[in-house]
Amino acid sequence: MEQSRVVLFFILAAIAIVVVVAGLIIFVLRRIPAYRKYAAAAKTASADAQRIKAEYAQAGLHLQSSIWAAPSVSGTLSGTAFRQRVVHGNRNSPPRIELSARSALRGDFSVRREGGRESFFKSIGFAGEAQTGDAAFDREFYLAGTSRDYVQAMFRDAGNREAVRTLFALGFDSVELANGELSAMRRGHAQLLELEALRGALEQLAALRTTPGAMQAAMQGLGGIRTRQIDAVCTVMLGVAIAAFSASVFLLEPMVDGQFAMFLDSWRLALIVCGVLVGATLIVLRGRANAPREFAMIAFLALPSIWITWVSGAMLANQYLDPSPARTVHARLLRHYVTHGKNRSYHLVFASWQRRRAEVNVVVPYQIFNKAQPRQTWIVETRAGRLGYEWIDSLEPLANR
Image (cartoon, rainbow, N blue to C red; front, side, top):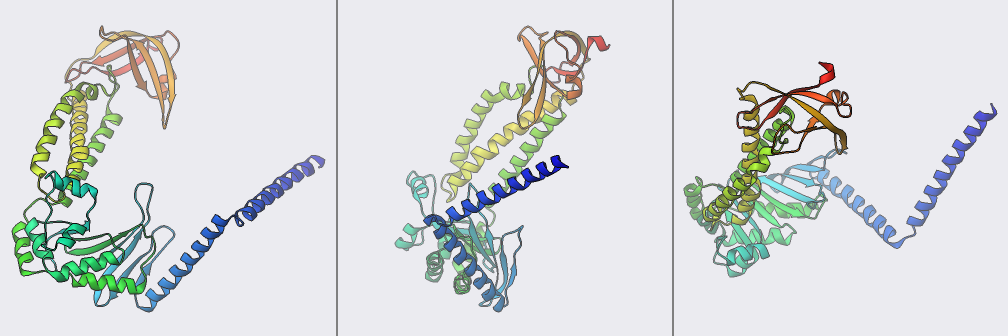
């Protein structure tokens, strides 16, 4: 009984210490000017968010919000059906608001402020931007789209240029049309727009209208390759590469020269081929408005994905299409060890039965690793490999045979 009381006393004392320390920390933080300023700003932002939501509800808009997803709003305002959503940022991208509405406009275009990168690529003749004839507008904004003729015809219209200027004045930093949907994006802002700002933005999106020249250019240019299509193809190729590499990691038996032997043997040739393809890509994309972005997607995503897919497929073919008979060798176990990373790996290191290398390092399941003893002799069955990369079919300590 006495021992129980002592334990209970120490538990209560520990709880009291935690409560007192937490209270002191909160007391000190609340008196730091930066914290008080942050708390006041957070309180104001919360009050503004509640007020905006109430105004949206009064205007008959549908608000969706939960602890799992960022808030989004849909409905009809100023005669325009729309959707507004907040996208929370992460370490690589800031938060943003995306406002979108269906449109009768045909074709694709994007408008963003012209930065140093765009100016540089234009100056060397790699990127070709559409010009509207309004010098001030052309200096401030960078235009890309279905075709240069289409974008020029669209924004030679003074009303369309004014709508873009107004949207950017409202804080938006890009305006796009894709697949019949107009959208405006505002980065660095993680709160729903004020109702009046939302109404004004929708009025400007609705003010963007087609012109006879733009319609004709869009009809002529719809067959060209678009940036979104290039992005989609590159993304699919990356997915295929990840799937092929994962298959090679999980389905292949251990290889005598190492699991990544074929990658190591092919990187020089791959680098040469990649260099040739990069040069061809530069020539093909030269003069397109989005050439820098498209080049980055192809050079740094698509081409490496092709190499990874090809090598992974070759490694799978080396094993699964191998007609060679099994070869049995007696190998002395030199050492065994475990590596601790994201996942544990169990390694057996044998004296090599090949002249060109001294050791063979094999990653095995724990069930096989658990049989290892110092200086054992193991019976290893190998196959030559369809492409000449020897792989291990089975291995077992000699004492177990």
